[in-house]
Image 1 (cartoon, rainbow, N blue to C red):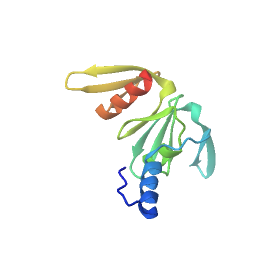
Image 2: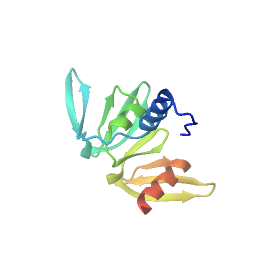
Image 3: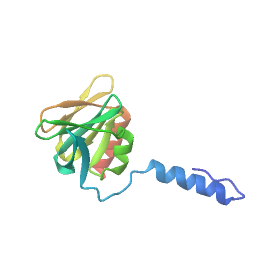
Image 4: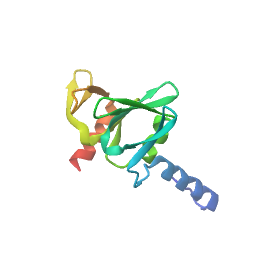
Amino acid sequence: DFVPKPVFEERINKALDRFFSSKKLNTKTKQLFVKSGGKIESIPLTKIVYFKPADHYTEIILENGSKKLHNLSLEKIYKILPQNFERTHRAYIVNLDFTKKVYSFPGSRYELELSNKIRLPLGRSYYKKLKNRFEA
């Protein structure tokens, strides 16, 4: 973000706020808690394959194929997840530990295959980000 001279404290604070709000928090989160059947259940992040939106909730797909609902939005969940979770489409967050292949199709279309054989769309901008991440 460009900060013009003379530098004012308020302008710098706004620029820093924008910078940090756009960055994913590097948290030590190891599990998510979801309400299920009148109780609160702990789900280890290592068991989560991907997230997708479901009405006003976020659906969590686990490695055993089961599904859970969380009341936070996809964007809010993304901000608390560790670095091995990446946005791959506006509607998906994937645990990169479960990724297997990337397929390329004519017209700059991409799909991401997961270890459970499910294929998810991979957005063009997310493809570039993912490619840069793996090449680094």
